[in-house]
Amino acid sequence: MQSLQQLLDFDRLHVWHPYAAMPSLLPVFPVESAQGVHIQLMDGRSLIDGISSWWTCIHGYNHPRLNQAAHAQIDRMSHVMFGGLTHQPAVALAQKLIALTPEALQQVFFCDSGSVAVEVAMKMAVQYWYNRGLPQKQRFLTIRHGYHGDTFAAMSVCDPVNGMHHLFRNLLTQQYFAEAPQLSVDRDWQERDIESFAALLAAHHDQIAAAIFEPVVQNAGGMRFYHPEYVRQAKALCEKYNVLLILDEIATGFGRTGKMFACEHAAVCPDILCVGKALTGGFMSLAATLTTREISESFAAGEAGVFMHGPTFMANPLACAVSVENLTLLESYDWQSTIQTIASQLKAELEPCRSLAAVKDVRVLGAIGVVELHEPVNMPVIQPRFVEEGVWLRPFGRLIYTMPPYIIQPSELTAITRAIYKIVAQL
Ligand SMILES: *Cc1c(COP(=O)(O)O)cnc(C)c1O
Image (tube, rainbow, N blue to C red):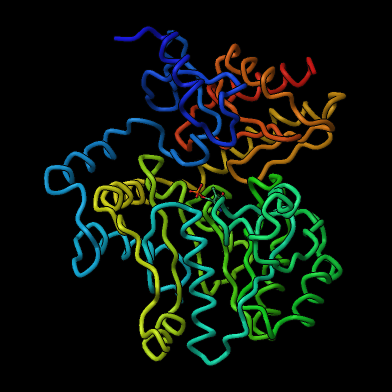
């Protein structure tokens, strides 16, 4: 067996990490195992995970019920192709998703990751208008500070600055970018917040297949919360101009904002909905794109006669079985009050950060707590500092945030907010 140092040396020279240089310049911490909200490092240290492995493991690691569901499914089959075959886990999961999402969403397309769910949604919108005899509707309207994934179509609707569009200028489709909403959830609604979105729709709706954005919370593009009325007005404008609405709830879905889906804050049902991240409870990768009967039925009449997409590992039975169990678990307790309790504690314990010199803003919505700084964090310095304090957080840009597992205990959440205060105070 190789030593811990040999493992790290090989990793640094040969194994690429997310958004990393090669050889890697940033420290990575080797993980032995994980249990509940704890990540056990190979050097013996234990960390409280404050970001649920990128917002996925809402019920913690190594959950006995998810493990049991996976074991039971492995003994039947871990995978079988989905072309021409179907299986109980996929059907059971589709039934659950249809029941949990807004009423009109009745058709489920399973895919492997969030980015692919967005690709599928965008392709679905374009092909829908093609089916309807409006092939010129191929572009998308989105809002600045969004994040929708790393593949090319998804990238084209990410924030043009954060998403570094200039790097891929000649390859990315030019989309329409409305100004990001400015009004926060607790302010009075003002019409001018949506003027830019409305103007772009009025001018270019002939070319626009769909508007796409993250409802109420913009996540990886800046951890911004905005007024639900924006979502409502955007939906009404889309209807007026014959443009579909795609909502990306890959980050906000499954309770994170205090509603099962963030679109419920605005009582809006999109034409197409993307879910992922917490779907399997962080067990493995799975995502889905849901749509309405009206949209799905247009495909039979179109030139292709079918929807032109079909991943090799579509509806992987193991991932579906674990997701069914994860959603059953979510429905088995009063998750709304769990999220409320986390929100109240985050509000109380992060608020003192506001008085620190380095801090620009503190905000909380559901189980999301954000401390925004004036200056970008220095990752090689700040990441090891959090590890020394025994918590796992992954700040980016000017943002230190927590999106803890729903099973976190008050004392564990306090350990996270204390570490944030202590480290930000030292900046
Ligand atoms: C993470 C994320 C994606 C991309 O999902 P991947 O599984 O990383 O491809 C897309 N949209 C939103 C809102 C996300 O948070």
